[in-house]
Amino acid sequence: MPAIDFNALAELIKHWGRELGFQQVGIADIDIAEHSSHLQEWLAREYHGSMSYMERHAGLRSAPAQLVEGTLRVISVRMDYLPADTQMIAVLQNPQQAYVSRYALGRDYHKLIRRRLQQLAERIRAHTGDFGYRPFVDSAPVLERAFAEKAGLGWIGKNTMLINKRAGSWFFLGELFTDLPLPVDTKAEFHCGSCTACLDVCPTQAFVGAQILDARRCISYLTIELRTAIPESLRPMIGNRVFGCDDCQLCCPWNKFSSPTNEQDFTPRHALDRAQLVELFGWSEADFEHNTEGSAIRRIGYECWLRNLAVALGNAPTSPEIVAALETRTGHDSALVREHVQWALLQHK
Image 1 (cartoon, helix red, strand yellow):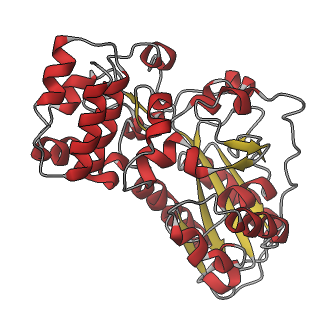
Image 2: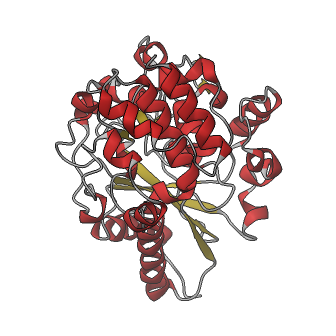
């Protein structure tokens, strides 16, 4: 490898990152021992619920050099995803409509960001020659928020989201592990202050404390990660949220500084930003497969999609249309779906 000015290269990497559509690029070292101990305590309390992969790969999450041999630095990137004018509060306040977490309205972000990270790596290689690297976008045991915080992209807020004082928290993260000894950026400072809006607003009171989430009560976990029955005691609190939950971001004062995305792939598809519950519940499995192609929603599968919608229909005001829709699924092949439909119908007695 030729002699390299790593300070100049770091600036070039940030410039190339912005050209590729990332709003910010930062560089961190690989020492995140502080976050590792926090993770171990969180796992010990079983706050991860059925997400066994969190425990299975816990050691690798805090040891980047074991995940990718030779790693010295983590190049962390963020990309805004919030579509313009999606009427979030209005949808949440309309119990006949389905609320889909804003990150999932458009195309799945994983491939897009991974492709951009690969393009960034290729630009670096053209400048430096061959080097060791590997891109990650939620695709391996990586404590992405810990690295992003160390890289100066924001701080981990009380709601466990990464928050940037100039951009809020409506953005995706990605990482490029590398063996280049780049200069590191300054860790972001904590700016939540005494605010507890996110902790107070959570519909299921899933926050045990600041920066401590009991995933077993989190609506995002219940509607996306959980593959079994949603606990009955939590169903009424889910409201019309059928895929994820954004409440702890919606209330965050820092999100007044967020900007709409410029990425066309993140714009809503199939009118999912304003769809009616009954309409979505009427999708056949073929409809679901077609309408969620290239979407993050597909990962939960049709069965859990109907489960979630049944809960939301149970929480909606009683109407002949809603009752009729639920009755069409009382004989569904899935016991999971049938149980949630029966629960929903009981709410309309």
